[in-house]
Image 1 (tube, rainbow, N blue to C red):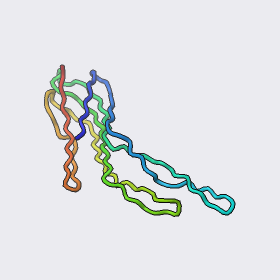
Image 2: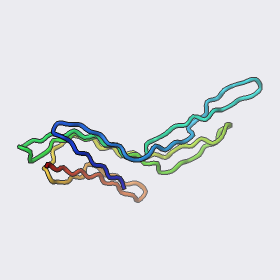
Image 3: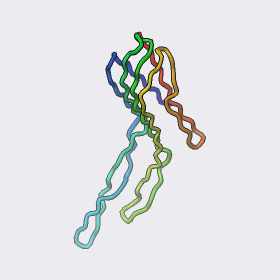
Image 4: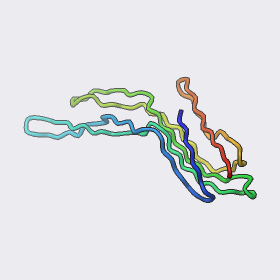
Length: 132
């Protein structure tokens, strides 16, 4: 379960990233030499986690917040392998949940801003807006 939190001043935009980079051998850089062929591994990576970018401003005398949200959650579901003449190449099965939009939210309330279901796992993205 990922949990992210941001504290924004009025009119401020902030971002937060949680999770880890998953590295894998995605290809080989082939070099041809006299009577031989070499393959240097090319390491690639994906984010197994969540990135959140939010802009907020009070409206209605502070009773509501105007929010601009960009959220992306990436999950490596499994790593498959394919064979090549230089060795195995890893192919991540990568799921992505994206939620973007602009909306208003009453201060002190919570709203579902994204949801997905895959392989029996359900992901809900909840956003709570509070003002001091």
